Image (cartoon, rainbow, N blue to C red; front, side, top):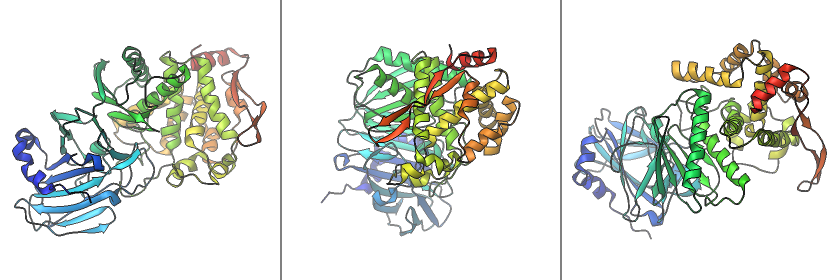
Length: 517
C-alpha cells in the first residue's frame, strides 16, 4: 500500500516557503511535487483565484496535439480533492470521464489537489521514476472550463537528487515557470533529472540542448550540425517564430513530438552512432521535428487550433503537415551539406517503394489517410497493410510531384518553397489563423500559374499518379526492376529514383535546382 503524502499540507505551506513565487503566481497556479517519483506518482496542487461562479469545472485533455490518438489520461488521476482557503472541503462530482465539477460555495479562491500515476513511455504521455521525469503536460494539468486562454504559473519542486529542468516554458525564477495560456502549457513538455544541458545562440536566438544519455556525445560536431539545420531552415522560411528553443533528447525509445518552443524526442540510448547512416538518420529525425515549427505549429490546417482536447480533431490535411515535413527534412539536410543529392533520391525512393508495393493504395486516398488517422495511429491489425496507407509515405511523394510541377509550369521561377513561404506569411504572420484545403490549392495555383487539378485528384482519390510525366519535368525516372521480398515472399519493384538524360534545358535547370547539383 503506497503511503499518501499530505497534499493539502503542500498547498498550505507553499506560499510561506516560496515568497517570490507567491508574488508572481497567476490566478491559475500549479505546483508539482515528486516525493513519490519512485512509485511513478506526481503530486499536483492547484490554486484558483478570482472565481465568480458557484461551480468550477476542471477538464483534463484526452489527447496531445501531434499525437492523433485518444488516451486514457483520466484513468490515472488519483485522490482528487478540493478545499476552500480556510481548509473546508468542497463537494465535487464528475460530469464525464475527463471533467471534474466543483461546488465552490461562491468562494473566490479554492485549492485543488490530486495525484497523477505516470508510468507510460511515449512522447505524449508522462513518465516518472526515481531517475527522471518526463511530463507531456496534457495528462497532468487540468484547465478550468472557460478559462483555457488564461495565464498559468507553475512551480516545480525538484527532488534533492535531481538538478536540471529542460522545457520551452518561460522561466520567471528558479523552478517557477509561466505560460500565457493552456495551449502554450500543453505545448511545452518538461524533462526533469540530471540530463546534460548545453546552451548556444544562433541568429540571435537562444537554444538549449538537453541530453539524457550523453554517452559518445561529440558536442562540437553535433551543435555545429544543429546550427546548420537551423540556418538552412531559416533560409527556407525567412523567419524565426520564437525567441528561445529547447531540444529535449531523452533516453532510448521510439518517436518524437514537435512543439512551438521545443521538441521532445527519444534517442538510440547513446550518441555513439554505429554507422554514418545511423547518425544521418537521427539528424533527419531532428530536422523533421524542427521544421514542424513552421509546418503544423505556425502554419497549420485550420482544424488544428484552437483545439478541443476532449475529442478527436479531424483534418484532411496531415499529408501536408506531416508528409511535406518529411520531404523538407531531406531538402534542409541537403542544404546543410549533411546529405548529398544521391542520398536525397535514396530517401525519397523509400517512400515510393513503401506505397507502390502496398495493397492499401487501392483502398485509401491520401486525404482519407489523414482524416482516419484517429482509427489507425499506432493501432495496426491484420488488415492494416492491405487497406490503409500512411501520409508519412505518400505525402512526401506528392510534395515532390508538386514541386516538380510548379517548377515546370512557372519555368522554374517558383517552387514548392514559394508556396510554403506564401502560406506562412499570409495565414500565420498576417491572419494568425489556419488555412483551408481550398486555400492551400489556391496558393499552389497562384505560384504555378495554373490549377494543378490532376495532382489534387491524386490526393483526393486512389487514382495512380502519372509518375513518368511529373518526374520527367526534372529529368528523373523510377527504376521498376522486380525483386523478391524475403519477408513477404512477394515479388516487388525497386521504385528507385534515378537520374535520366535531360532532353531540354528546363529539365536540366529544374533538376539542378531541386538537387543542388
